[in-house]
Image 1 (cartoon, rainbow, N blue to C red):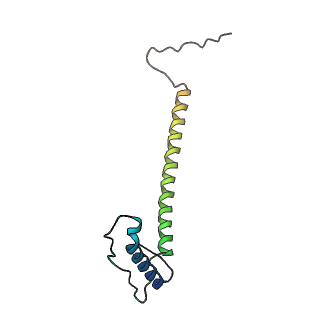
Image 2: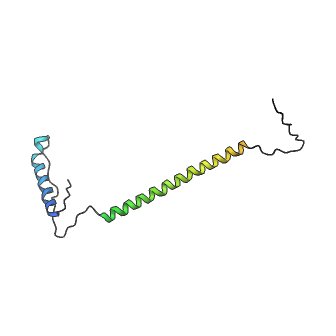
Image 3: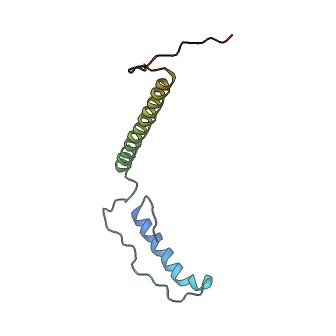
Length: 113
């Protein structure tokens, strides 16, 4: 069980009392007889809360944002490269290329009316 509070002494007291109450009353709700408290919460002077740690949270958010931004930029660049390659292929298929060779005579252009 975990419990968080702004006051560490109050957090220890509430966590211990809830665990005691649960172990005494669990058989009223379930058919369990062997529930016991393994470790009680202890208060030591000068304890600091484990969370939240704003600087660590901000650094983690910055790192994740940076990685996501680089990933999106790489993905966008790959899409743009595929688009340019597709356009180059289309342009090369639309334009007639020079066809030369020995004995090659181009056919005259015939206009249909």
